[in-house]
Image (tube, rainbow, N blue to C red):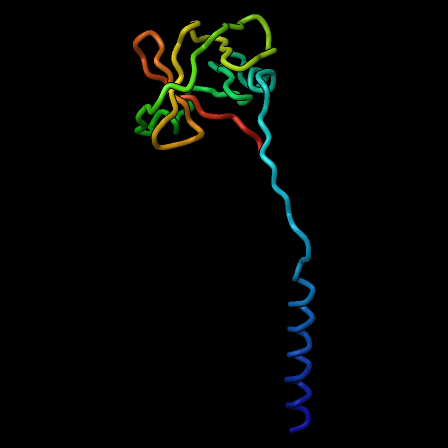
Length: 129
């Protein structure tokens, strides 16, 4: 009987110690940063990108193209074209024409929709986490 109580006590103590060691105090911070045009174009020199609100957006991403999205409100337009270097500013593109309208999408906040030469294109925000 004493051995059984001792055995149960040791198991309880072991479980208590294991549980106590697994409890972590403090907080974990996760940050998501935007990557710049240079990083995107280094990975894919033929990428079709633009910058909006400090974030680079890229098109021709297979899974994004498969999404059924509707454009919402116009949030901007391409004001400058930069196909010479990777120093991008907001509303600047490397392939879209100046004047191309940028719309938000009703279904997703990380995808913008543009109308370019009668064609609808979907652009995904490129971020790193």
